[in-house]
Image (cartoon, rainbow, N blue to C red):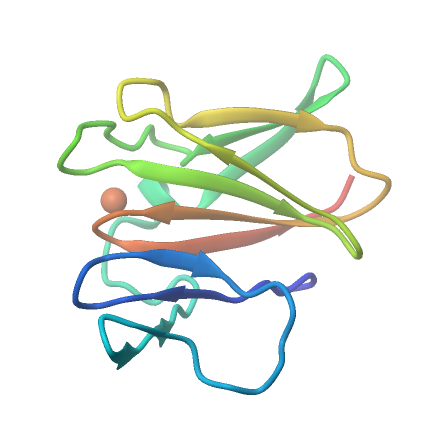
Length: 128
Ligand SMILES: [Fe+2]
């Protein structure tokens, strides 16, 4: 991915966190190390998870995915992140909303991430 961000998950309680400043120590939760999430590695539908990104009405529009992902309390997209060189923007989704979000148009290329509570972290690079 062009603009890498690191997300970690606690496999005991399900907490997910983003690393902002790397200082060397391990991230832990529930007295166990958290797992670094690897993008696009869970065996699940690519079409429902890889973010579909386009420019629409002067905004960056992200939908998950090219085939709409379910949004239920049991299975949903929790957040969408747009990562630029020195800027990270996250929109948290409501489980009863659509799996999509609009962002300010970036200066250049971006990496777009999304997190599915069942199927993990997915990402795609996008160039204007
Ligand atoms: Fe999913």
